[in-house]
Amino acid sequence: MSKLIVIECSDEKSDRLAKQIKDIVAEYEYQPFRGPGKVYEFGPLRIDQPQQEVTIHGNFVSLSRREFQILGLFASHPSEALPCDFLHNAIWPHPDMEHGIEEVIGQVESLKKKLRLETLDANCRIIEENTQRGPGYRFAVSAK
Image 1 (cartoon, rainbow, N blue to C red):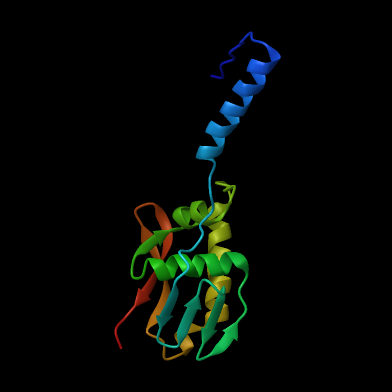
Image 2 (image 1 turned 180 degrees about the vertical axis):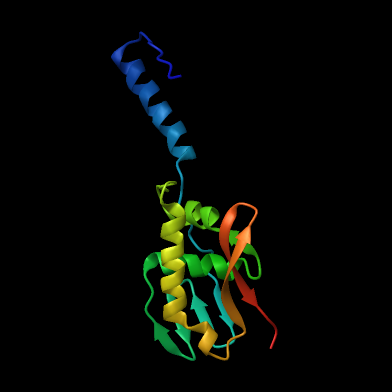
């Protein structure tokens, strides 16, 4: 149930109070994922977060911003199952919980098609996996 509070004060005090409330709310606003600025190498796959570039065998791979962010999360959590809702909440600035899983699945499928890791002699793969929180993905990395 919503509650309403009425506060009587001067204009000066109301402006100050409004600013304080905005500052408090801003502290808790969701901040989308921003990679730590590392360079990851998994066999022929190279993810350069500072330059926002992905290459395979030295060849540039064009990714959308969201695909790049998802790949950055995978690289920073190798061999860890990441639920779709985690990926969605970490990357989308205003997550749409109703369509979030479909958005993530679409982005990851597009990412997989662009990288084609399964066709390369790469030591990493993006694997669909069921997690305790529902569908998700694992960036499987093996030693070669």
